[in-house]
Amino acid sequence: MNPPIRAVIIDDEINAIRTLEKVLKEIPGIEIAGEACDPATAGEIVADIKPDILFLDIQMPGKNGFEIAREIQKAGLSPEIIFVTAFDQFAIEAIRNAAFDYILKPVNPAELNAAITRFRERKLNRAADKTGEQSISARLDALVSRLPAQGKLKFSTGSGFIMVNPDDIVYIEADWNYSEIYYNDEKHEMITTNIGSIEKILPAQGFYRISRSVIINLSYLNRVNRKKRIAFLTKDGKEYTFKIPLLNIRKMERFLEQ
Image (cartoon, rainbow, N blue to C red; front, side):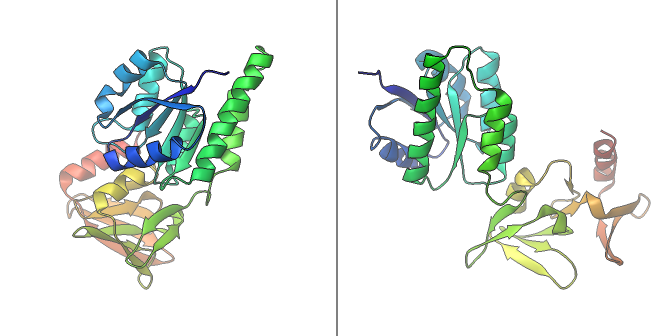
């Protein structure tokens, strides 16, 4: 009989851990060897247990899943990493980190089963042919083929959710714990996400938070008046102006020069 697959779960939400545990227990041959809600302890737990698979949340306070993945790799540890995330757009970064797989929350039992099956098949293939390790490139191609809504971001609304192409956004403005996405003067949508959370999931090089309440799309940034402390954006011949603190002007200039 083959030894069980040893798994560790790292997620800052205990309910998410319990949900994943429940689904994993329905899959024969899986041993949940450890878990943690504190991402700061992830490296130590993985080093102690040396799991076959690490189920890793992405957006966590203090240290995100990508930082943990890099830390583990630098330490010479090599569990297969399956990122478990509520945000489709994080799949791109998961690919850059050469994850074995990723699963979207809420966890679908069929998708989890499929991921475990792929893990077992890969393990068997390696055992049969020690020189046949699948290339990183091939693994990434396989992940890319399964990406949902390429390039779009998923945001919740009061009645459901929307899929947004970041290129279409001119700016985003905070409205208490909600945010308003503006595509132009006439088209905008309210989403149930605060601006701080939005800042974390937008493409890093394409957007900049110029104040506590406004994020702009740098593609539409036309000019900045330091004296009046105003940023000017232009889209389809329409100009948009925003107040911007002097310190943020300097920070944005350094950002743009990178």
